[in-house]
Image (cartoon, rainbow, N blue to C red; front, side, top):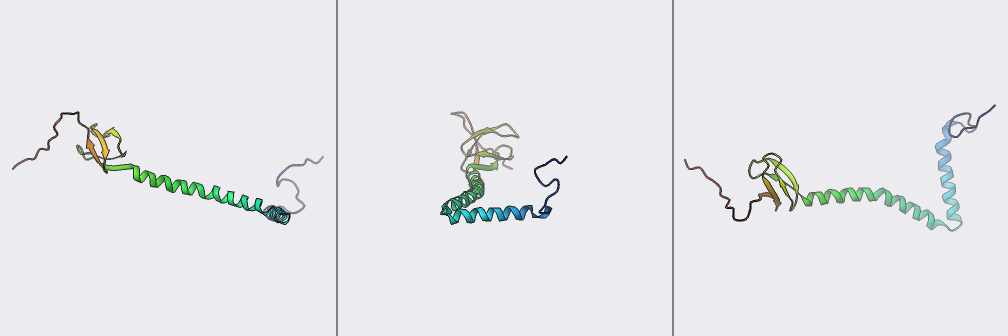
Length: 125
């Protein structure tokens, strides 16, 4: 009793090396046939769709990287000098010292309650 199977298993009258060539010949004949009966626009639209599907993720990745560079701030904490990254205009606590900070103008600024006077101490020798 002989069982028929799909794929390359079993005996193949055309040999095992012509699977890819057979696909290319079939694809060429289908495209040629559609062009011959006036459906070349369908073939062109399929190629355009394949091109868009191929190029769109690349453009999205480049656009996302550009957006990240414009919207992230990497700077040092003004208290402990720890290098951190945050989104522009966001408020966060320093991961090292816990100081509340805000990302402004490519640097981090300490958040202080209204009425607090922030002074810098300089040692005089």
